[in-house]
Length: 494
Image (tube, rainbow, N blue to C red; front, top):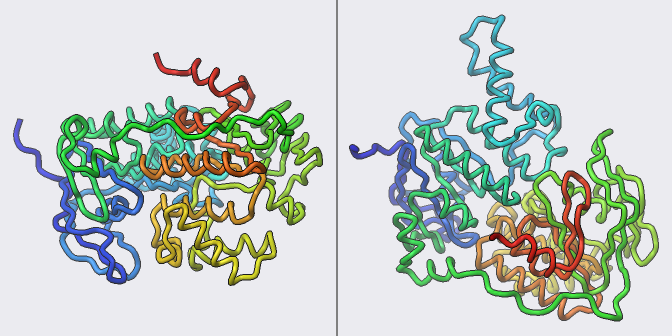
């Protein structure tokens, strides 16, 4: 077989902002039908390198080197899909606009049918098998995993010769993740070059032909995937690929614990469709409850009901036996502080135009009445304990990586000194090293703070190992709940 000609190429790319090099001399070739993966910790430069193929760079960046894309249409699947979906338009309309432009040469009488068929085919190819029904929904009515697959459908519909997939499996359950992997493999099999930016090492190993390992903007190691996995030569690569250690601490409920949060007869709806039915669920002080389930199973809806972010439900959410108002707008300040929510899409939860440190500090001012100067100092300490230095936190959100913003979102919730912390897939977009640190931190918080309880919304069994109890959701129903050790033993592969 002859040598493949690259459909896109980056040579010696350097991107500098304010004297700091966020990408430093990176080169890569995108080959037709091949998957090239960029891996590394949050802030290593993966996304900046990937977006360079689209000709997009951070505001104010000084760029040197070259980016060549020879007549290749580049599709982009971002880490945060909601950021590229118009919230005011139905999913089908968004896709139909693309498809209509592709069939304009056809006779008018067949254009609409041809465009609709292309849309449904793209949704099916992106593993949205119920595409006809989902296409009538708005983006906010889809789970994070469903949003991700809609964006993938957009890229497929465009007929791109290069697809840049930025964390395409973030927030997906194992089954849906395998489907996305299969689809990206099928895309490559059709001759499309795929650039995969991912913290998900399992997905990288299953999908990538070549791996580039990045650290502090530089490529420290590259080569065929199996060679990098089996014989990594750089110490950073070996650390990145190290197995997940057993988490420290025991988060099981104490014998003197009482129920701090209880769900009773909960029936939640999106418009007129019931999407969640939870007759009874309880959380005790000092306990970690993991809520497991596939994308679209109702996990996030449950979490949002607890936090007062989804008010269209019947039944009760009780804090210390007192019914919480359904909307956070109706909750008292102490109730808002008591139940804090950490979003899966951390970037969308921050104001783009204000420094992150100020936004984190604002929680202590608003919910605890702390003076602004003291709140800022406390915020800096908490952020630093999560691995985010004050120099980074003093920037606006657009200059932080997804992983850095996730740590900032956790710090913001902790500034309220909550009694219940609801974490919605907060480790799904993190590299293995940052993920270990976040989970160890949560385990330490449960161990050290008698008054804190944790609800972990996750599809990841490794993350669920932090929990003392697990509830499993399927199609909006709690189908199983019990001790984490018993349930995880049942679900262990093999």
